Length: 225
Image (cartoon, rainbow, N blue to C red; front, side, top):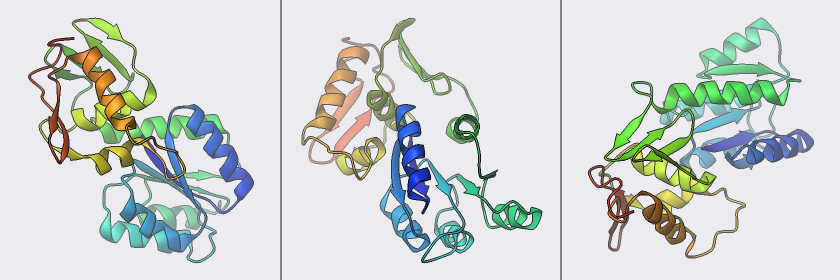
């Protein structure tokens, strides 16, 4: 899951980046309100954590600008503005949740999990792709009923492909889903992840579309593993 953190307090931002990356999230960080919309335009984010008291552009204004173009990205406001009218303004501007500073990181983790569960697969708990089953909430994968070990980035890649089986994803789209701006990415990193997934799930499940990228074949799960 890729998250955009918008926070101008560098000490708080550093702590959140370290804590949430440790949990397996991919995070990018900007510290100005006027950088929010360009960041959302440039990246494929599953969620945004947004401070309100920002230089360049107030967080509420930045949120309204995002909502004019991006209706679906979930937003959790993290702010020291604790008055009722501040909370109402933030939620009316398009936020999905509002967390008042100072807060416990464990509470933020719980709200992230809840928000991402609601947004990921509201209609069903398990994705069944042939012999392969994916539980998005438990973040587990089974092949023929056997649990398969799945590191964070392999799981993120599989979930990206599995949510839209048959769709061709470009290399750039998949790398954006897996890596933050500050991550050092080897030129063949994506191919390595695909190779590992094919070994675990079946050689025919992830197809290479030459010159474009990859797609997931939902009817081939578990074959040739």
